[in-house]
Amino acid sequence: MIWLIVLPLVWASLAFVLGPGRGQWIAKWLAIAGLAAQAELAFNLAQAVGVGGTVLAHSIGGWGAPLGIDLAADGLSAAMLLLTQCVALPLAIYASAYYKRDDAAGAYFWPLAGFLIAGLNALFLSADLFNIYVTLELVGLAAVGLVAAGGGAQQVAAALRYLFATLLGSGLYLLGVALIYGAYGTVSISVLTPLVTSEAPRLMWLAGALMMVGLMLKTALFPFHYWLPPAHGGAPAPVSALLSALVVKASFYLILRLWTGPFAPLVAAAEWLAWLPATLGSLAIFWGSWRAIRAERLKMLIAYSTVAQLGYLFLIFPLLSGPGAIQAGVMQAFAHGFAKAAMFVAAGVFIKATGQESVAGLVGAVERLPVTLFAFGLAGMTLMGLPPSSGFLAKWQLIEAALAQGFWPLVVVVLAGGLLASVYVFRVLRQAFLLAPSDQTLVAVPRTLEWTAFALAAASVLLGLRGVELMQLLGVVA
Image 1 (tube, rainbow, N blue to C red):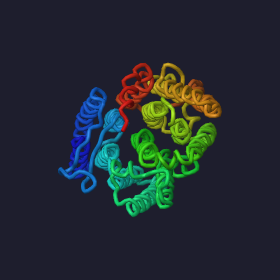
Image 2 (tube, helix red, strand yellow):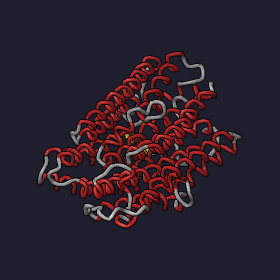
Image 3 (cartoon, one colour):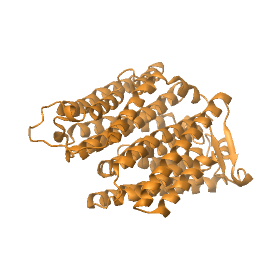
Image 4 (tube, one colour):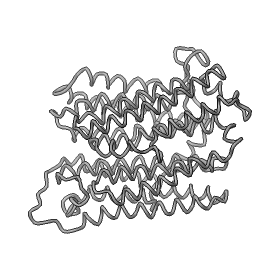
């Protein structure tokens, strides 16, 4: 657990010290080697949790809660750590070919990406509400820096909007933590959980409301999504993929962790609360899909698709009292993580090759970039929920859990969302199959970019055939 946090901090700091030019070349190989080691560590940790069936814990400096800071890994946190390393490693390989040696944005990418991943790993392992706030700030500021690294006017404007959203969300979360500490005298999740009951003081209810709103803002759940399309749609392709596949999942993870942990007695006392995120998630699916269907720029289409796909994660909250809900949510997080990373890096290939960012500029792509288009189609298949993809498995589990509890409206939303996803995915594919003008010229792109997109898209499909191990791992949830 410690090395999953320390290792990315080490190679990110070295990348910062080495600087641009030749140092950038060394930094990218340090990052790739570090991420490969982190992937091995994450697999070992998941195996230890899954095989042993126990929660692993570590007290930093030997000082446990409530005086010290605890790290803990159960099935949920181990799964999110696996997703982070398995998406970040191919994205690092992609970025190594995407950025040229003299590219200023590339010099900033490696240290900021390292700090971002270190923050994500620390967040998934933290068992302390205030320590989680520190990791949220690290992730948020690194993400803002990545968006602004290109230096363009649109990117800086999007980064400032993102900065305001992430600071506001973190501020609301921190205010909630302060109120909880005032009411119970602790910020340790393990110590706090048995203290909270359905008769909790109003201060606890206010703290919970502030923390949930702040985290929903950072997750870009409708209607708090205003910052996401410009940030994800305007950033370089590797950055867009990191933000969409991983960063927005961190705050969702925290919502789920708190909802089923310290806030569980409050939710049980007011069951209608579970329908609030589910309603917002349903609206996100329809609104995001509609905007994706109408988007003219390819990356904006994918960004609005992220708004829609995040909505599925929040449909599980009314179902948490029954079996299978957490498994459905995490499988959706994995499916969306791999598929959306594949879509953004495929879009980066299209834009580099054609020099155009519009969907209309994709004419003839099937002849000139067949591997990239196939990768985009596979990722779209996952978003639509077609078998045998992981998207199909996630939606099947969600529908099964909803039917078991008699919640038919959720089934309708899931099925309608899949149909809407097919509209914007086939809109891109149709354009790519049109005949290209005879005078169209394409810029050659490295094969590494194309095959990385294909690998991520294939992973989103193949996970649907090997989801049993992930479901077993999620059985060990504290």
